[in-house]
Length: 69
Image (cartoon, rainbow, N blue to C red):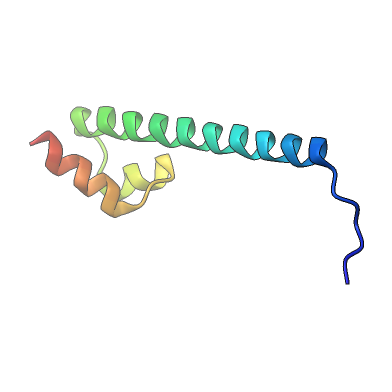
């Protein structure tokens, strides 16, 4: 059985850190999507190459490609 003492300040600090990390992940994801859109416009790489380069799923890149048409 866990006998740890609840610490409100620590709980808030952990929640703030998690929210900050989630925000960073969302920003990174949005930047990858914008880069993929730009690469699709340039028409230099294939969608699978763009997905690999930007760390996106191929389905995401293909959907972006459909939206640009």
